[in-house]
Length: 529
Image: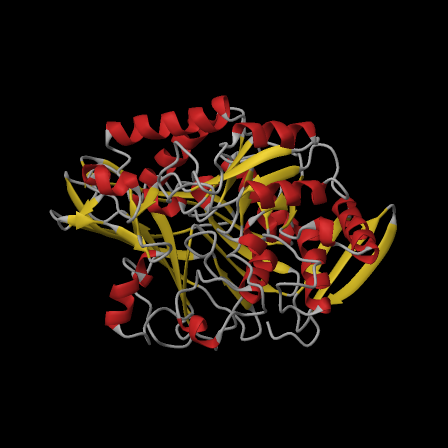
């Protein structure tokens, strides 16, 4: 396969060509000191019309299904600029630094991509993202794959590694096993995570009373060592992590954690460590702690009262986060933290560090803070989390219906959607037990507070159990009927399945074995994926 490469700096341009074969490949060049303006490599790649195209999305929530060559990857092109600016819709992902051409057959993704024809894969995977995210662009109209290094503005003073990547053709197992062997990455844990999360039923409307109610319900069906996770809503405002909401949790969290432990469960807590909302005490009192871009604080999105990026180069921010994690683990006694909106740590690079390098640094800092306590990563660029968290989300948040309300479907690829979550559970299932244990987000068995059909709920939990290793629900099991309790037990048995495979030719067909017995099932019949 032939590759053409070009590097532009503010002092010179270098280009060349060569060939590469399967396995690990690296391109380097010598450059005069200066600032990088662009790095690109072009590969002529022929893709059949019926071949599937996968481009990994920027962060865990980014919708990234398999495409065909005649489809379009939608950005924010059709939204009015005043709406994008008002709600900071371009801040949730790559929209503020990657162009989305409004044309069929043009696709892009980060860190890895593959082309699949039946059971045969052609995988391109980066082996070094700290020197800049590898952005893959495929133009189906010209059969051209372009690799772009996201390191514009980086100051260099000599040899530069352009791209280090892995290429392989073969079965799914062959190509992904080969890539992770070349990366030398293994999961931190093999312990599957089962249990409860408060978010997808109560959302921020949690308090000590309803958490204790749900805890009692969990005792009826969960096993010793399962997780009871308190999600967003325990804190006064997002960013204020040193105390609890005095109205919702007047007695704090320490005693509640002790009661979770005495019930036989592990205790988990949600935080968004690298951001703070506009109404938080942190934001109001410490304006100098926030990342400055063009003279103003960088707004990450419109959740809550609007939220902003903390500057991880500020020593006071680092000290504050160390104090917060000390309180969560050492004073309150939590065993696991779900760390969310992590992309907020690194929306930009600079002349000394790439955007990706900053994200890696942020993730290593979190690993240091948590020590042997478990991390469930969420809202994070995918590859910087490899090997640094025990568990990681691979999809957007599921919704209480199939695909959210129509007007929400017009916004970013990171929106809440059960349909989109299923896309990613399917297309990213290869990361499970290779990069970390994957979190496909929660499932529902309840009948109240959801518009999903019984078939959709049952198929979602089947997919979660077969292709993820985080098996959480936001139901209150205390409200389960005996039929629901039995259904939960049966679905949980799927976690013991072996040789699980998925076929995506027209329908979603899964195959697996339990105790040597083979099973096959078609999922989501009649639900438009």
